[in-house]
Length: 63
View 1: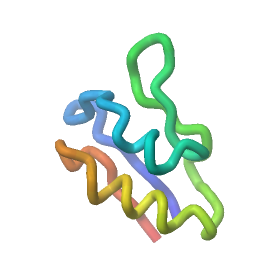
View 2 (view 1 turned 120 degrees about the horizontal axis):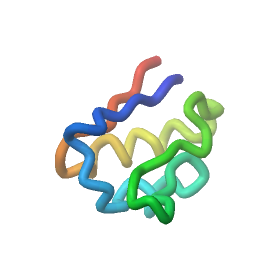
View 3 (view 1 turned 180 degrees about the horizontal axis):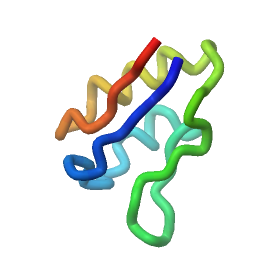
View 4 (view 1 turned 30 degrees about the vertical axis):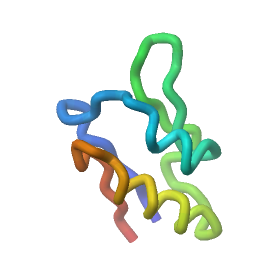
């Protein structure tokens, strides 16, 4: 599983960090960062939820 973010769409609203805090974080610079760009399969449900709730559809999940 691999995650990507379209930073032109991302508003760094932190919804993804709420559902997948082991994968995403908003740092002091105000931008979304990956804690794990290629997370273990056990994180798939949380990452899939983050993809679904992203208001700008900026996050994609590749198998």
